[in-house]
Length: 462
Image 1: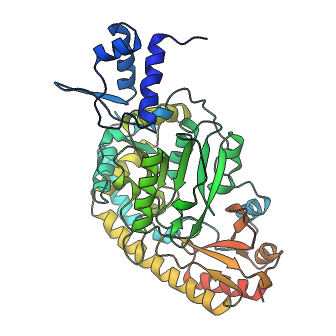
Image 2 (image 1 turned 180 degrees about the vertical axis):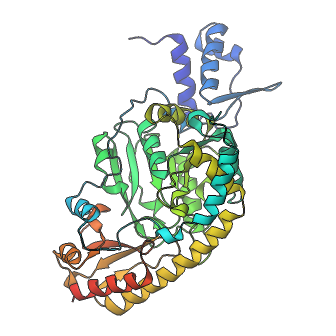
Image 3 (image 1 turned 45 degrees about the horizontal axis):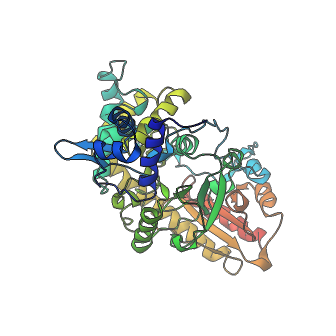
């Protein structure tokens, strides 16, 4: 079917922006010039430009003209089929399922769970917060699917402390980081597009993403995180990259300043859309991480994900996504179809929490607790697995990644571990690369259980 002149002009402008011919901030030709070049009347040009402004691609500056306002993520906003993916982040391996679901009468030493022990939840402080919420409770919110406006403002203030300048209109409140990622991949990544993930990573083995028709490309992670130079050839504007620069799951790696700058330069030059997952960014142990990718993003290429669930526990499902307003509105529309909105009571509690001194005090407490547990885990690994395995030494987050030496591998390791009452996360839930690996989490159990669990693993690998 032949395109209308209106649609031809819309596609022409999008092509010039996406190809980099018309850069963000540059002035586009006047309506008169466009009409002359394209052989169409000015009313058609005006209608086409109005559509592009509504999409957030263009913006008119009074007295000057129309400029390019956005690029890569906004260009994903048209004609995206809504694949409601069941179990998007489901790992799809029988061994991983058994470990996660095996609940017997005996208490397991849970070195597999990626959550905080209940005793780290600030129960008394949260009771004070909730009393304040209920005292102010009106039963309604003006936020709609985008989230409560007070919370979105509190998130902006929180992000400002991390060097991220944004406005409430560019923030979407989600039910945790997992939902944020689900929304992005469902609403903005088209079937057939290349989704570049870290390896190892929970996304690396996602059956849901493959079933949605995405081409998963896995980039190896080393002690400094994802390596930008290992990017494979790809079609321009048809690639999305997911990265967790701060305390990556499952390796705990931390991307240094130089590599972050390189990744941003690559994304801007090649117009790669980047999803930055900063869920663990506040849980540094030794020193604060470098500034996030989003702080360096001057072209709107980066969608930023944050969360309180890693700080307050899995029952507090509050997260957020930050990006261009047009993209946030698109995600909010999809979210409205999905769940109608995140729990309002939790949103109001999160707003008060972030605006108080309690958040910073609790982070200091968590860092002390995680530092203690990490040191105990590393000491136990040194004592019981030296010569049998190698492991990462994370500077923050929950995780240690262990690789068993070839001459110590036991194909029944995970079954034997469960028989001894230990649950770990097998590496084949995160990577398809050869070798025997597993993830240890030190966030959920006591230091005594950490020592005991790792000692028992050492006995199995003898």
